[in-house]
Length: 478
Image: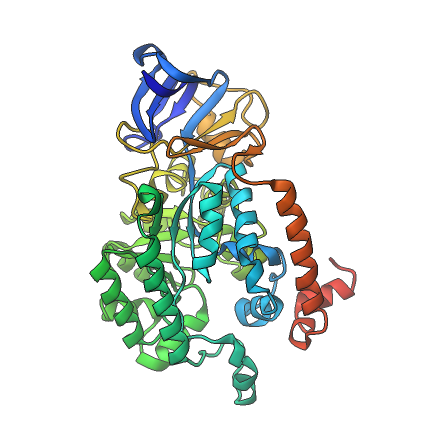
């Protein structure tokens, strides 16, 4: 007898090279593990709990392979400005109260889970505090604290010395040692928690925020522990400027020259990479995360995921950060990724819907190093899955013959509102608008209070008042 049987719905298993469609299927679960998948009439119907999936689509939970969760408290505050980080994000968010960071993470997880995300690749500090939000939600986390030698508290000192946004940032050894130590402690304490639901990897921030020696020290430690590295790569011209000035090479050739490009590297963005550099990252076996909405909004660029995948690379999707992206919604990322790639190529062919959906599921899980555990509905994998209502637009009508419309409608039209159930390791964490472990009304009250505090702390800050979004607000444009 199974613990749980989900039966009667159409399945997208993501098995094989495509989406693994099964009409009128069933998924049987014992504990946290999938023990049977197939057509309903081929799966035993004896179970302690039966979930009727009639008029539902059952598929793997979505994977948000790169996000900065706690920044959601500044949602929409850093956009439509050049030199985004130095001219918008840092001035507007520098007054964020670290005590509110776990609340921001919980809000981001609420948004993601209700829209079908079950795995989060969260890249944030202080992760030792934020991890409590991941534990409370019951979602799956591949987490890192983030290692950097950048100390924004010294910004005024840099400016007095002639530094301008876009210039290479000075590196601070004490900041590096503190954040590196925090990452090691995080790994010691939490890697493998809850039978592997929580996985800790190493997060060097970027090639311009760390020296060659620092990057190599991080790599050596990560390899010693068998951990992946999660690195922003070629995100901004500032990164290339810094490595050119310091080492005479653009960011990607520099990383390759010191041996960082390889299968243990998650390379996020590649926004400023040349075609040859994209090919090099793929050839070295590094994994990519594409954050189409974030990079499209803050940089006006489409990350080169289509080329990367065409050259054999494995790529996932990420929501990045809400100050610049506005949301943590992988359905939105799928639509943007598929559409922007077509527009960039002036062709309807790049990033077809099925390939984009794989990047949001099995490929995203593979990028994070957990593709052997989740990302597809297969016997022996953990039951991380979602259900969607097929009786409502934009998934209605369901057309199956002679061609199916489920995958195109998921990628180009679904927003997440039709998600009715989210399950992680066999546990239902969201169902019919209700969270199993989170009081959403209390989160709303707490977020309202925290946002009021952030606004009050920022309203008299000269740096913040000089940002374009403040001028647009005063001019009544937004």
